[in-house]
Image (cartoon, rainbow, N blue to C red; front, side, top):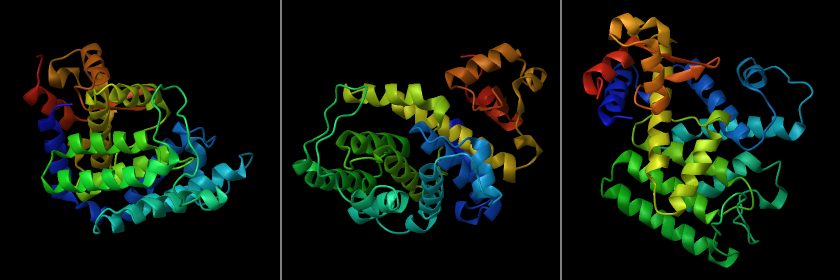
Length: 299
C-alpha cells in the first residue's frame, strides 16, 4: 500500500475528527469489530452477528460457549481502554494489565502473569525462549521499542518489528496473539493512527507473514498492516466523511477511474487500491480511487 495514499486518507480523517473525538457510536463499533476479528482468529465461535448483538445491541447471545462470551466482553473493555493508555508510556505493567483484562475470568492464576512453562507455537519451527528468559527478553523488547520510538522510526516499520518480536518471545502461556494485537493498536494510537483489524479472512496471510519474519523478512507483515490500515481508514471515513467517502462496490467506479471493474478488483486484491471486503465483495470509495489514480495509476 502506497505511503502517500495512506497519509492522504489519514489526513482527511483527522481534518474531520481527532481520533479521541470520534463519536461514541463509531468507537463502539470499532471496538466490536476489532474484538470479533482478533478473537475469531484464535477460534472464538461468536459470529459477527453475535458480536453485534452482544456489544452493540447489548443483548444476550444463545447457544455459544460461556467462555467465548466472557472473552468477547473482556476483550472489548481492554480495547476501549487503549484510548486512555495512549497518553502514558508503554511499560511491562501495561502488557500484564492488558493480558489480565482479557483473560482474568478465563485463565485463573495465569491471567496477567508471565508464562512459567516452555511453549511451542503450532505450525512453525520457531522456538520461543525458555521460561526463565522471558522477563529479560521482554525488558529488551521494551527498551528497544523505546529507543526506536524516540529515534522517530517510521510508524509501520516500528509496528512490524514490535509485533513480530513480541509474538516471537510469546511471553504468556496463552493469549499472546490477542495481547500482541492490542499492543500493536496502542502503538498506532500513540502515533495518531487509527487501530487496524485482523480477522479470519487474514489468518493465512497473517501466519505466513509471521513465519517469514522468523527468516528475517518482515516486509510481508508490514504490507499486511498497511493494507489493514487502509481498510480501517476507509471504514472510519465512511462513517464520518463526505459523500466522496461512501463505500460502494468496485463496479460503481470504472467510468470515474477509466479502469475496468476487473482491473480495480485485481489492484484491490494486490493491496495497491485501498478497499475492504463487505459481504464477500470488494468495496472502496471515490476518494480512494482518486488517490490511487493520482499516486499510482497504471504503473
